Image (cartoon, rainbow, N blue to C red):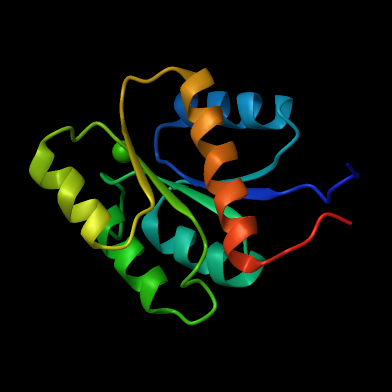
Amino acid sequence: MSIETEKLILIIEDEADLSKLLEFHLQHHGYETLVVHDGMAGLNEAIQRAPDLIILDLMLPKIHGLEVCRLLRNSPAMRHVPILILSELHTTATKIRGLDMGADDYMTKPFEFAELISRVNALLRRQRCEAGAQWN
Ligand code: CA
């Protein structure tokens, strides 16, 4: 075991109360967080800050979350960053579209923070394996 550098999680979520709660729970579990409230800012920060994981709402101002997802997947730098969609849209069709757009996971609101943290941990673990990174 070793000390890992803090992972940065970009939260793209326009609901202020929810984004604060997300920050609180993620920071409590050792993650660094960055919140933006619309799709355009989300894309900009993703490209500038290169987060380790992105939590993405769908119903967002300026650019819809599905489009944000598609654009991130088309960006060479962001192609492999895990994306977890967190949305009030809970139809199967929307979930399928989200996953087809390249999201790695999809959670519907309302949700339990414990489950969200678990899924974030799992996505980061899986990414580390795929990247072939070593414990050091
Ligand atoms: Ca929203």
